Length: 413
Image 1: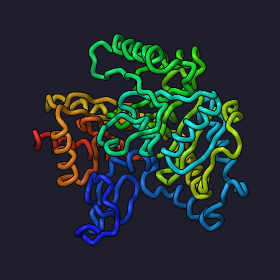
Image 2: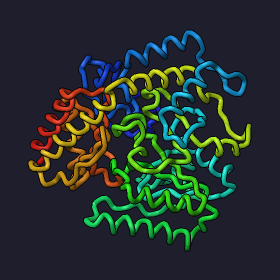
Image 3: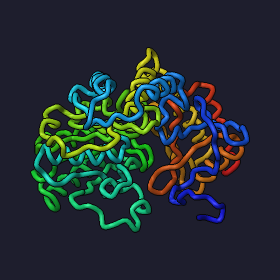
């Protein structure tokens, strides 16, 4: 027990010290009744905002019918509707679904099914990726060494390939360099016929919200097709409207073999989905994977309600419009301060990168303390502030947040 008398673990890193009691829309309220504009959205999970009435109603109604219906024992009546709805929304290659509780579980399930489907033992991820915090998903993650410190050794069979440097002046050459690095990996560390899958984030998340270049994605898809490797898109953070499309992979002329979904799928309720080709699932031996809380009734209800909100007429148009507004306003601030090096993003998955982590941290702190706006950093060196408001954010709320950002730039410069 710590000196405060708390019985909670101290392992969580803290973005703020706020003690909150409720949330509504894009705001959270602390124990003192103060309202804060939340531009973290549960690290991009609260896609429909806090306590969206459609989602709350669905959860409440389902809680009166069934809280836990274990899928091995019997199938409840929302499993097929969620799968059918996802089949309509995901790329045409994805038509079969497995449900679980978190992104970590879904990423591990993706590794398992890829190995069953291909009979191969290894996977490839990319420098700077973040796929989770279990031992296997940490082996797949290289966004920050501190996350891995003291937890090794990690599971074998994970190989890390280069990712294009987004700051390189010649992007075409940089993409070619990264793809040559993957080819060299095949020549020096792991033969392609032993690789079950390549995992890629269509927008790199924890390294600093970096859109994956289309030419790089195309190069990966070509190599997957050539060598019989499964192409797996990790849309944990970028899926369900975050980039202005239902899935970020839609910006590329590629249909994944497997799609990993979590976070925004159920407005932050613990629910996740693995989408795949039916031919892949057919090779997944029945009984070889599962879980006590897979496809929970309340999770399914939250997912269906969330999808109802996200697919309403004009919803994604608003995400794209608010994203354009946010990026335009942030780029205007580059004229105020040379320390603001980069503004990038798609939809409402936006990053502002500074010259030092100290400056980024000072701006986040100023926004919280002086404007009651919650932001957080990301990236290997924590120089990047990421902007991930709920997708229901209004133009006025964008203006409020960027005004706080402008004041922080001036105060900390």
